[in-house]
Image 1 (tube, one colour):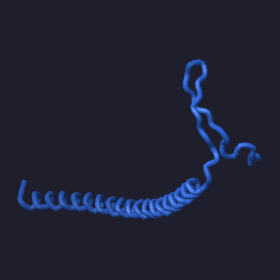
Image 2 (cartoon, helix red, strand yellow):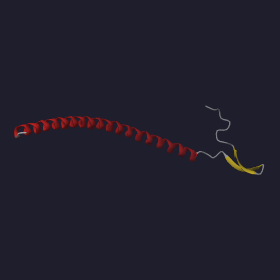
Image 3 (cartoon, helix red, strand yellow):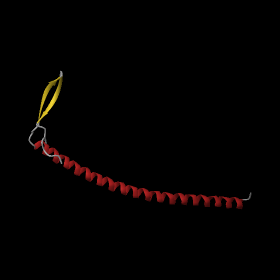
Image 4 (cartoon, helix red, strand yellow):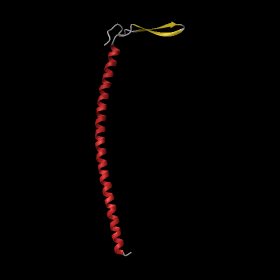
Length: 100
């Protein structure tokens, strides 16, 4: 094999390698673009979830305050039945109210 054909083979190999690298580069560019889009969608979803969690937390705080401030109408007493200790609820909250 002479030097000219060896150089030609090396150039052919480099050309093929360059095409493979270009193909991989294009694939990776597409992958980066896809991942950026996915990140953006996931970030927006996380922001919406955080907003909703905040709203739910505020609602729970409000309900808890209302429960604490409402008068205690129910009573609990311990009774013995058949040798077992049971709790009996007297005047349950909402007793006698029409169901929704």
